[in-house]
Length: 234
Image (tube, rainbow, N blue to C red; front, side, top):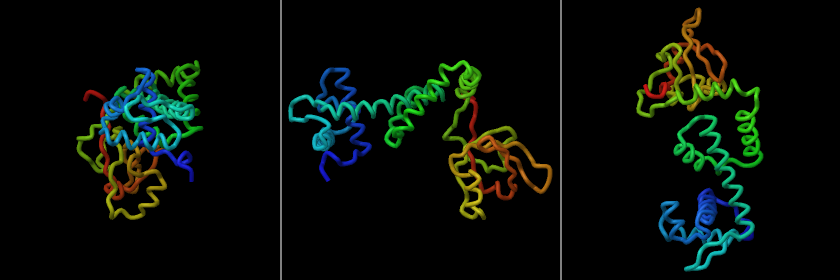
């Protein structure tokens, strides 16, 4: 396989994106600028630049500014669009702090490809501009800033979740019977569940998961551990 056809690692994408941003800001990109922006060592920058040069994405010579080739500039533009789209989605729609939104976009952008990005762009445009999305905009503005997951809060079992309270499913004990059945229901780490109260009979509790109410045996609920989601500022 030709070097120019080799796949790009997420690390190399970060370097290419950084080079494009530095050139846009300063009209040139020196290796020291790249090292400072990415907080990496000079030898790491040199290795990355050699790899990008071998792929035909940059022009790299010692002691001279790095330049993007036409293909490199196009590739960098695609990467930056992914990053900007994700950052806008996190900050504008999910109302996440801009610094955290930028960091999250950096981590996630490498697994997002077309047409996901273009569809996300259309979703953002629709929510922000369409008249029939006014109620949704108001809901997002009022609700999203209130959601705050405290990573230091105590884990509690699902059966002890207060009525009307939501939590993020964080841990499932190993001795739960029928794990696959519950996973198929969506009860997996990362899921957001809300406790609705006791079911009318049979030692069951009611929970809401992905907008759907489910019945769950209290004995089984003891195996699911959640971290509370609290309103911001509490």
